[in-house]
Length: 195
Image (cartoon, rainbow, N blue to C red; front, side, top):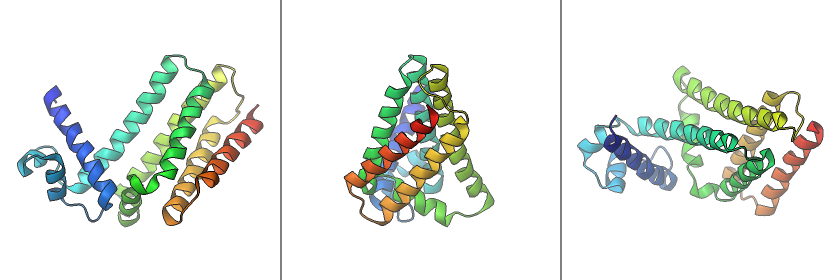
């Protein structure tokens, strides 16, 4: 794919992201994305055949960005705690602003797509999150900043904990204090048991 094509594809994904945030998953049409991006219908179909395909690409791009961010931070030898502090801050912001995020669309997608292929996608998403956090925890251990015997188990706990908070935040109004308290608790609990 040429740089121009890649740029166009990323522009479409950015526009589609805004539409999915506004409308959820089910209400979005290809016409919505065409209008948001200011491109022709043919221009959109050159890259994507359906809203589902676009949404899957958004999920994959999010995974890629997370992996690249962690990799760059570790390559730059940033302290583990500094990387984790940034991670927890981003999680807090995501949770407090969840109604202005793509999370509603993500849950609509996963709850309505229950075939084996879609379940496999969800499984890969979870595995990717656990693997990246586990890699980061191992980095902290290697640097001597923390002690964790089972980094993959610790990472799985974080992923499951955050998933539960997201569901709760989508279904009820959580205060920022409550969110901060919950995130502080898991950090303290994780590191108290680790060190």
